[in-house]
Image (cartoon, rainbow, N blue to C red; front, top):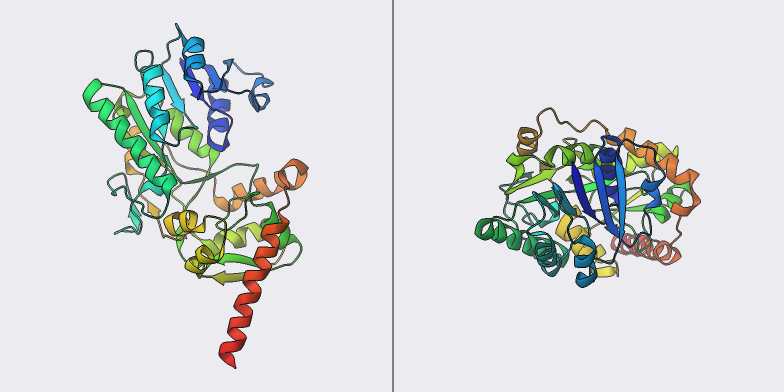
Length: 343
């Protein structure tokens, strides 16, 4: 089997790429080649072919893809309709299945029912990222209906790997600064009261489900969400992180609305439009399309591996003093407000 991945070295796609090579696929990676060493040094039964190209240079991409055909093509770095329109032009006559990676954040916010399935309406007035994903889906479904373009839409939620600790509130440089605050015994911010429901999915579990959809005739024309079945509160998520660090958790709860109003970190989109909402995913459709699939890595197990990996590799410990100071300011403002109310 032969696959083309546009991107292919991110949190989700790296795990899929590794497993495909282990299974003997012929995998073409089209990207700028900055992180392909994550895959190219592995000994596998598969074959890795690197196509160094900026996919946004459509003319160059057309030349480099000329005369190539694929069983599956997947774009992991398409975020707007103009990008999937470009993919359609490049691949419409050369692929048997095109997989678009959308987002579960595209589901209705606030949801009319906390149980989320593929039947949940798509609507998110809080986050442009999500609205762009919806536009991508609408274009691809139109091409499927009108021109027979063989699409599959995949909707991940919060997927993580060993390189970064997944959180609800963090700065522009990622999650390390929050991890450092826990290590240093400083308080950390949890949005809301920490009791809203969320789902974390390890990228290796995601990869198994995704591969089950590749080349799957029953997935053509379908939208499918891929998440774990485990439901956690944000308090439980942060507690598991602190436990993996073997440190106490000093949690400070701040309303999502306040964080969105007081910050420069797009919390309106990422929180109000996503993580502040309780979600419980119904993966019945996925399990029908990929019989036998189940997510196997419990969060407390997966996060311990992530923590150990991050602590052992300095390149993932990117400090963010600006965010650290912002956290101190927000927490101090809360304490001051409480003191004033108490008189």
